[in-house]
Length: 129
Image (cartoon, rainbow, N blue to C red):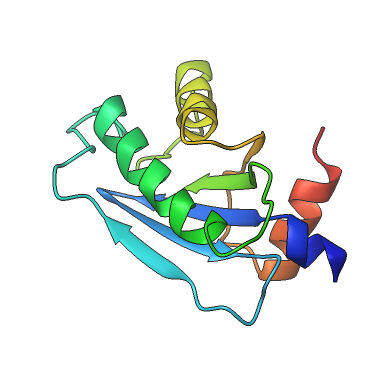
């Protein structure tokens, strides 16, 4: 209960030019989609225009965090859903980490694999260093 009042954990799935975000501290809440008016995906990278992608994500995170009183920066699980063939390079991993930190996250976990349930996403955030 206290965790739900003072904390926000977000599961962010990144697709071409959009984020689908779920507040996993409140599993009953519906996920929300945030699409970019300007493309942040390029032909080669899921987030090729960093400043555009960061701006959209920052505004999306504000939507979730403004609902709480005395909310610290959220913990974020980021999952790129497109353009991950062969896994992520070190540069892509860093890009997603910096994207979330720049948008206001205090902890970032990157996940590449199957889409996760709310429980699985929460476990990843709770167990990853």
